[in-house]
Length: 215
Image (cartoon, rainbow, N blue to C red; front, side, top):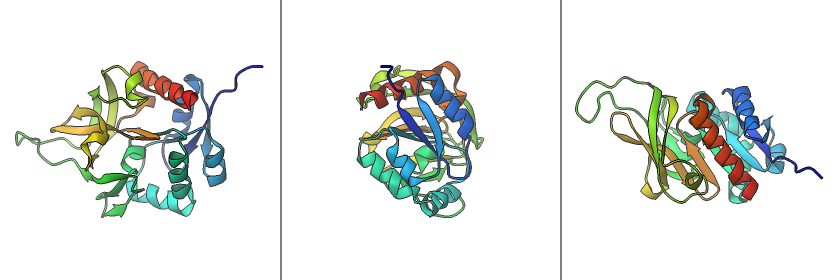
C-alpha cells in the first residue's frame, strides 16, 4: 500500500502568499492545503503560517476565526509548526507595528522595528530586503537537519527580540545581529521566506518534511 504524504494546514488569515507556499511544500513531498477552519487544522499532521501582511491584521484574523487557540493546541499536541516571516513574529507576546498588538504569546519577547541607524551609527535602510546569510545552532530537529549556514531571501521592517536567548536557533546580520530563526518544542520559525529562497529554501522545507514524518 503506498505511503500517504503528511497533510499540512497552511493557515489563511486573509493575506499572505498562500499558493506559492503550498506549491513549495508540495515540491518537498507534503500535501499542503489552505486552511481557515479550526477543525481542519486539528486534523492536520503539521501547520505552516506564511508571512506576508501586517501583524495586527493577522492577529485579529486568527482570533476571529478561532485559529489562535487551535494553533496553540496543535503545537502543544506535537504537530510540527513552521512559521515564515510574520509566522515567526506572531509567536511572540506583542509587536509595536502600528501600535502595540498582542501576539500568540507562545514565546517571550516582542517584535520591534529595525532602528534607523546601525550599531556604527550609519543610516540603515528599512525594510531589510534581499539575500542574507543565516547561521544556525542548536539541536532542534529542524536545525539539526540544515547546513550550519545558508543564504535566504528576506523582506521585513520588523524583527523579533526574544527574551530567552536559548530559543534563538539562527542569526543574521543587519544593523547588528538579529534572530533569523527561533524554536521551541513543537515549533520552528524563520524570519526569511524559504519559498523565495531557491535551493536553500528547498533544503529547509525538505528538513520540515522530515520533521513532520518523524512525528
